[in-house]
Amino acid sequence: SEEWHRAMYKMKHIGGGSWNGIEIPDWKYTTGKASTNPHRSTEINWRVDQIVTGNRLAQEGQKMRHCVASYKPACMEGRSAIFSMTSDTALTTGRRNLTIEVNQATRGVVQARGYANRNPNPDESNILSKWAKENNISYRGHWY
Image (cartoon, rainbow, N blue to C red; front, top):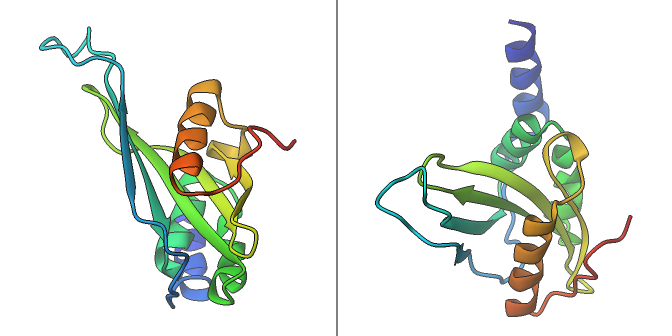
């Protein structure tokens, strides 16, 4: 009950509104190899989608247990663009991997965080690097 009340508070105070974001299309990339046996499949379908509404930003912060919702003013002012990296496997769908902040002026990744502000793992960092390269975004691989 307490968690639900916190989520409702965030949606009321942080949610709402929308912005144009940065001109980067939603992105998909597949790694690994599919198998008819889902337990043997190594295929991962990665997606990187831009978040352009306050409600979705609040939801991302709630699900990922970090403060990305506080970036709403920077998004609305056109300073930051926020992206969500998710993945699907034969056994899981819609796994949230990373939340990515891009500085719109420099077109550079400022930060990327997983659940509870963890750093990207090597696979996520590799996918992030591919996404950034394909979209003319600078990414140094790490910045911590």
